[in-house]
Image (cartoon, rainbow, N blue to C red):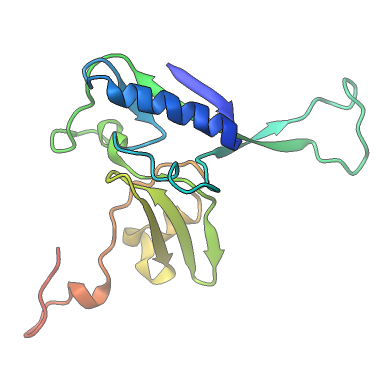
Length: 180
């Protein structure tokens, strides 16, 4: 089942109430597939002035159907809140997930637009622990740290790159220990 509402506080509250109703049921009856990678309390439902929504570009009707001004854009950006629920049992545990499609149920999702700065990108993710996590992906992280991928992701996309431990904790040496 897919539930889509306008990306307003009222639309989000309706989706959130539906989410709470699903969470009260046993997991064998219904599983939340998207947008959340967890079955915990929504982290964006707690603040009063923040709500979970996503953006989609849509084409406006052509000028022959509805006339518009010359300088009016032909593309509009609509915001929406959504939830995807699967009726059958639980998803595969992350330890048993083998394919990227199975692992994607546990990847964090971008809940706000990325912030592009000089030589780094800032992302806000909803992670599997039910928290909003801010990650800073620097150009020095390179391909393995996900910088090239971070330049292409958009609001609402899944983030498949593992969290990078800062270099000062990754060193191997006489007095340092390796963290991974």
